[in-house]
Image (cartoon, rainbow, N blue to C red; front, side):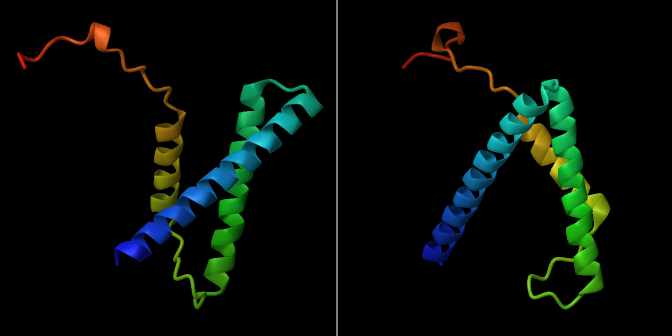
Length: 106
């Protein structure tokens, strides 16, 4: 079971990395090629992801016997996608031991 879980985690990490690299490359190519503001290109990327969701959901509604088992639920799915976007978009605060308050004595 642990082997399957680690294999699953590995496949997810590879997919995440591949998508990040592909989307970064497409974003850079579009922004520089069209000379558009970064936030406009971000909005266009979000629109493209929304269109991809719509197309994949429509395909699964038309074929309820797809072996992947996904049953689209736009409300839940879009909430999950929005949460994932928000989680990844937050710039992390650097960890700095110099500004931490001591919690006690060691």
